[in-house]
Length: 146
Image 1 (spheres, helix red, strand yellow):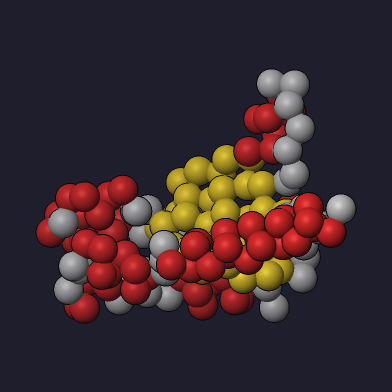
Image 2 (cartoon, one colour):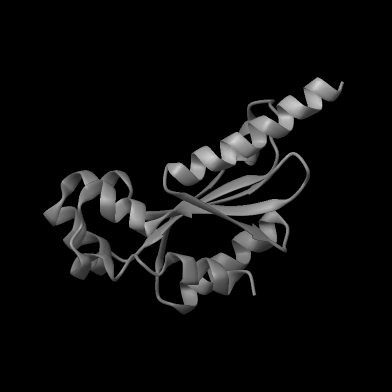
């Protein structure tokens, strides 16, 4: 039993470290998944940022007869900010528009995960002047969790 628990804890810590190494930032949310999603949607609307899509992974799993902890993906952005990046560096469209995954872990804790803008900048060699419109995703996430 102890070995199994240790292995699980090691895997969780390793997965979190691996995600950070891959340019993913995960921030805890004090709210349930649905409320976190709603709050982020409100912040996006207030800032005039387009919500392109919302994917309810758990809801779709349920429709297929499967179980999954709550997880929703928001895809959002502003074409005025993202288009210049994609025009200069077409492969950056793999990361744009921006995305935020709101999910619940095995212990019931809710997280908001998103791509670190610095990772996107480094990965695609985006010039500083083009990064300004997408660099503030962390501030948007923070505003939703106040």
